Length: 269
Ligand code: HEC
Ligand code: HEC
Image 1: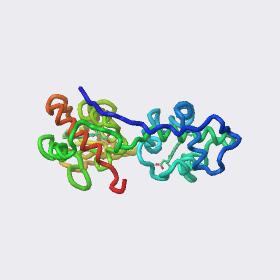
Image 2: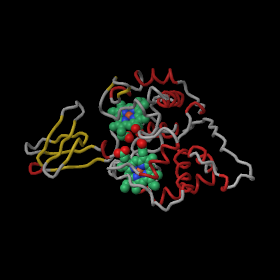
Image 3: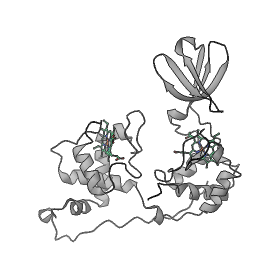
């Protein structure tokens, strides 16, 4: 499977060697740009893996179980590097997001910020082979994607809402989702096949579960509720209900879909 696109990374801010740490600008914004070299990014990544990945994941894409959000797209609580610095330094009060060790030097916090910054990239700098308008047509037409997926309030509910899927996914990840959907399916989209007290087997997405009951939603978006005592048999299917489009759509159509999906991001972006 081929996907070619060019990426131009912004040049790291470079400083003359004459400027040393002793003349650090006092403004936090300026300090951030000091610790933004590839070396700093690598140091930040090492720290992240040790201290942050257990909640946010090794790929920083977040984790449903810990409630730690995806850090690779637009963040909810910060839109500037200084904002991210403050979150990492001070934590988010009242949540599992704790401050870093008070003795950690600012320089190291900035390296973590530089690492987080390196995970996002400017979509306008990405040059994709596909055509987004043609992609919409495939999405609603031949691909029939909207029977399962909603975009901006239009479409089905049998898959995740894709209105902002371009924010947190790189083009190659979007293509992967289309050709290899069974890879890494989130528990929310696992299928449960349950045989209840009436002996009838029903299958659907796991909508909720507690000590006493399980709820699923079937393909016709009916909700079914099973008291655990009544369940005769339950099977968990960790594969995606989405088919692979490798082969059923042409490379050109896949490129067009990727180009379209990549444009899907919050309106005010
Ligand atoms: C114990 C779990 C945990 C650890 C460890 C953790 N975080 Fe978090 N983090 C969270 C949670 C939960 C939130 C969401 C807080 C909220 O806004 O409700 C969060 C939020 C954030 C945010 C704000 C995201 C946004 O969308 O605004 C950033 C940035 C962040 N964490 C970075 C880090 C970094 C860097 C580290 C390591 C130094 C780290 N976190 C370690 C759980 C964790
Ligand atoms: C039968 C329902 C169904 C159809 C049809 C379908 N999908 Fe999906 N799709 C899903 C489900 C369920 C998931 C979540 C599980 C997974 O990751 O595969 C998903 C996941 C995705 C993801 C990953 C989303 C994310 O947040 O990472 C993308 C992108 C996607 N689909 C695009 C498409 C496109 C484009 C089409 C049409 C060519 C399509 N889907 C057709 C059900 C469907």
